[in-house]
Image (tube, rainbow, N blue to C red; front, side, top):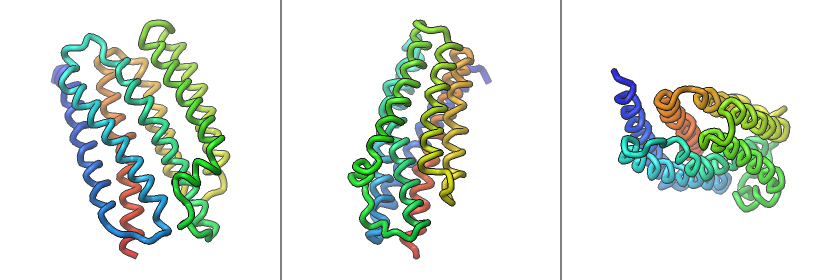
Length: 229
């Protein structure tokens, strides 16, 4: 199959999966759950916002990817919203697990409380994430050499995931597997950035399919388990 057809297929596959994930998020939110699951519901609402942005972007991409000469820089408008949102959601889930592991009541834990108590570190993580994206964008815009931009971005990437690990994962049971999946999928974007235009965008589509959806599906599963208890 020609690379152009593969690229087109991955656009539509990613779009379909994102729509299905969003439907799953909406489905679980219709059920009433205990007060202890409040933060999980809010995190799913946050993930739903990510899905909405992704669906809008991929509808635009499906319509324009043959018309726009270089589609790659446009992805950064999507990523500037979705990646910090997902990082906040990830940290929120880790804090929830820490509460559960220490038998603390999670009914008082919500997004506003999370931002109040963890806001300083969340801000640092989001700034480092933004610097990573800016370095990537400068590479796509031709201002920086691609290898240089990816290398700089990887430094910021490593620092903020190290901060997340040290503060929310280390010594907390039930967090390492999710953390490892985030690091694995997100690190592959840097590898894809070094590929040719068509292959790069095809792999971005595939990575978006997994990285932007697996956590929403996972949170839906976690909340469903809470519901059927």
